[in-house]
Image (cartoon, rainbow, N blue to C red; front, side):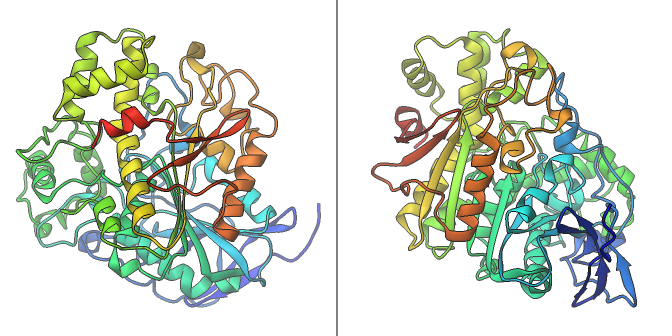
Length: 495
């Protein structure tokens, strides 16, 4: 047991005392914005009030109001955390640093969870390995569900995204005191968090706050139109028995908002001009009349280096744990394709041709994964590669977990323990745990984590850039193999 004094850092709002761990330091639960309470839950984030004395930053704080989230028989608690830890002052960051003092690359992580769940408290987002390897890692909470993403007349849209931008402003102002270089910030996120990262790339107010971005299983085509969002708002107002206006929502308790959000599944968001980019899986997303990929194609964030990728079997997470993979029928494939694309028949034909041996479950999962993540990632990668003076790099994570009788595979979220170098955590192993019963390849986590750190430091992950001709992509598995346009036929089917 070493008895070094606990580290104290002074931020613009006041001093914080963190924890020393194995030569690195962690500062937990530092507020970057005022507590969202009452009407301010639906207002833009404001800077936090200063405090006197030294604020304790040694224990995890509250997180955004949310209901506990389960995905069938797979244990996702290391990913989602254990639900809602109550407290109003939850717009906070955790900072992991090798040592205050220094000029180190900074990485800021945005968690996933379908825009309704997740937090910095999840086991999977321990930034110690990043700090050990010379990076200042920041994780953040943002508003979720109705408070974060319901498009309410009288309130700004995409409040959860505005929270992320506010956290980036906090980083710009304060991270030097923790040893980070405020001019070398990499924003990275996974799933809903990755879609938010894509949204930040398309947000003019965020320009200049980040130098690089990593989009892990997100979508540059994942935003709802205002027309689609209005249907969700109408349904939420009806569920709560109030008018669809911010004034009517200001007095409703967080508990009631969380409960109402959980009843909004299954709203038909198909309009004359747009399909539902989340194919019915979540009633919340970004709300934009121009998709992030289109904004990037128009030249936004041309000075930001981009690393973007998906997992080989993204869709399995939505089918295998709920026993719908093995039982999928031709009708299920038709239904998934119809939700995903105006030319469903052609889409199925292309996928069938590319995968002649595929079961109905495999076809359904592949179409679902591309509807949610693949098509929107290809669109964002292509837009950035064509309209940017900064490099674009692409990856595909292909290591298969043998969880759930060998069926879970290289599914959504599978890359995260490797990125954070936490693949050894006991709760990730076992027949119903994310990484399954087998040991992953010994050096996969070390190599993948090191690659993310290298990208944050230099903008080059170590393979050829992605351009609109070759579409060079690193396929990450026990072996790492660079391939050109690995999903060419299927990719083209989405144009």
